[in-house]
Image 1 (tube, one colour):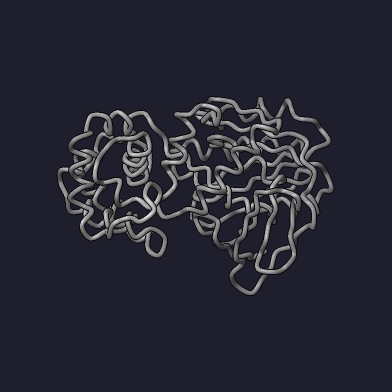
Image 2 (image 1 turned 135 degrees about the vertical axis):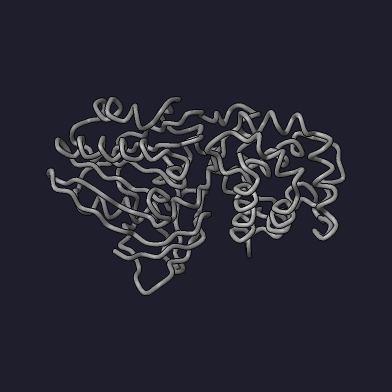
Length: 339
């Protein structure tokens, strides 16, 4: 992995963190000009977003109890964190002291953020699908990690009004802002779901303390609300029937669909996953969906595949439709609706 590419990734990540994580924005700018840390990052697993992976690894080790002054700068660890301006020397020292452990994590871990609030822009998509075909939905999530987005129908939603949508009794309440002039069609109650299957190269088991801690470590230090939502959703997950399969979601897709009831609408979805897929895999996924669409209704909700926008493509009665849903915030804080 070349330093020039790594340097550019950290500069871009600094931009992505603006207004969301002062700590990661500050460190990313520093790392982009630090050859030692860029060399450390060169050990990262191919195809993974390196800044997320490095920061996740450091956060993970601190959450596991590594005793280092660096923890004093993390809002996720201490109640009154120190100012970021003096933090980088400690970040660099931590990476030096725990270099081998960090390298081990960079080589084996995956960035599999379970951002539950992304369900806030998925909910309108599933409402629209159900309204079009009036069939129960059979869910398949590619890159599911721990499967929390498969439970979108078990959460409640607020979109800047007094109206609550989805499962109104749920203690997992997701709020998101609809930007722009259009407001999506929303069903008052969640559409019916007949089955849920999640596939990932590595399934994160929420009952495993190590997997649970890694997923928490991927949440940015300042994001207390994201941690709270994750913890609530994780508690809810253990009570729901969800099938999680470890393997290549694209390769396994046809066999998974074959096992699903014929009276359901197949809904294949993935968010912030396709950017980690090689082009050949993306094309194979499209071909699989096209083949499925010859025989039954199938819907494909995705982003980060060809561009960053959210898309909803489908085959209904063998006819292909492609739509752009809109722009989305990476953590689901807002989205636009263009349909």
